[in-house]
Structures are given as C-alpha cells and as structure tokens.
Image (cartoon, rainbow, N blue to C red; front, side, top):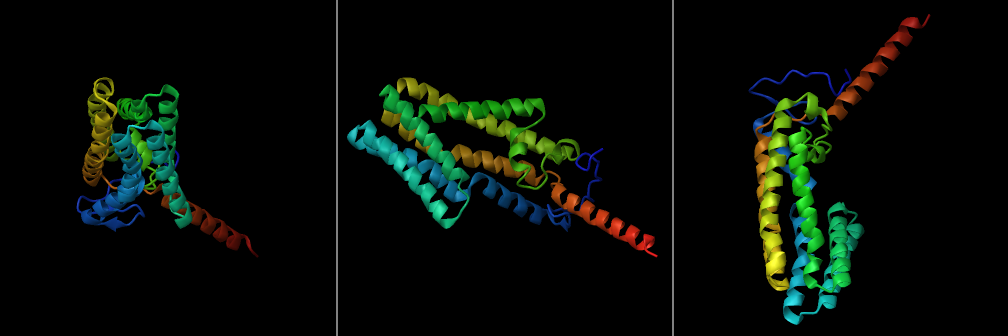
Length: 255
C-alpha cells in the first residue's frame, strides 16, 4: 500500500490527533475545524463580497429600473473588491469567483435585455452545485471532502484510512446539496412568476442564511468526526527517516 492508504490505528477515546500529528483535546480539534472552515469559505469578508454586487444591482434597479446602470455598478464593485484584495495581497479566489459570477450575469442580461437574467447564471450554478454535492455523496466521494481535504492537510486520506471522517464529509455534502436544492426550489418559481426587484431582494435575503446553516452543519459533523490525518507531516517524517537511514548506511560503509 502507499503511505496514503496504510491503515492507521485510531487514537485513544480520551485523546484526539490534531492536523500536525500531535494529540489535542476535543476543544482544540473543534477550534481547528472552525478555523479551517472559516478559511475555506472566506469568512465574513467572503460573505460580504458575495452579497454586495447583487445587493447593489437590485437596489439601483429598484430605484431607476435601468438595466445598464445596475449591471455596470454591480460589475464595478466586484472589480473594486478584487483590486482591494490584490493591493492587500490577500487571497483573491472568493473575490474572483464573485467577479466571474457577476460578469456572466451582466453579459446574459445584456444579451437578452431581461434584467431578471442577471440572476440566472448564479441560480443555474447553485442548482449544479447542489446536484454535484448529492451525486458525489452517493458515489462515495463527497465534494465537501474534496474541498476541505487540502485545507486540513489530509488530501484524500479520509477515503481509505479515516472512515469516520468520510461519513462526516458524506453527511455534510448531503446537507449542502439539500439546502441548496431548497434554495433553488424557492428561486426558480420566482424567476418565472415574480418581477426583477422581487426576485432580487429574495435572492439577496437567501444569500447568507442557507450558507451559514450549511457551514454550521459541516462544523457539527466534522467536530464529532475523528481528526484529520496530516499526510504532509507523514511524508516529511518518511523523508527524514530515509535520510537518517542513508546517513547511517554511509557511516557504516566508511572505513
């Protein structure tokens, strides 16, 4: 077996192993999980960057009913958010994803001339993401594990070496999928029946609460799961051991 697949005995019930490989209390493990989730999903700033362009679009459109000025304002604020992150040398993945989402919405709405189409690409993305969470959970490769594995430095070790953690990732993926499907069940009928401002305000209102619920459920599942196996630390330990063996062999071979 490879180092990623070798079975690892679980730590004693009264101890847990932190991502660096040492033992830690359950409280420390929960804190590590919380910090990793905060990093993976962007935290408060990431939520602001997700909400602000859509909020600006619907606010301006509610006031003047002008698609062009609303779309340009939404795209401009997205670019400003990216520029701020670049100037501060922060992680830009959340801001860039927001720019691409807004840009697709702007292009789609301009092409059709229907302001509601500004929201359609994001809604379709949400539906696709919901299905991806559910399909991968059914397939035994839960998407949330693929997302968080590198964050916890465990990569895919949870698939074969940490069944309790795999169960937690599967439950979390189901939670994300069902929550996003419920969100789609609200938004898509509104896309057909409501006007642009009604759809926009409902969509803004549904940006944060479902997201927070999904993140909280993920934290609950992972906080109760076995700790992650730090495969990077294991590989470094194996490299050190190999160097020590070679050094020892060289000393023994020396006259």
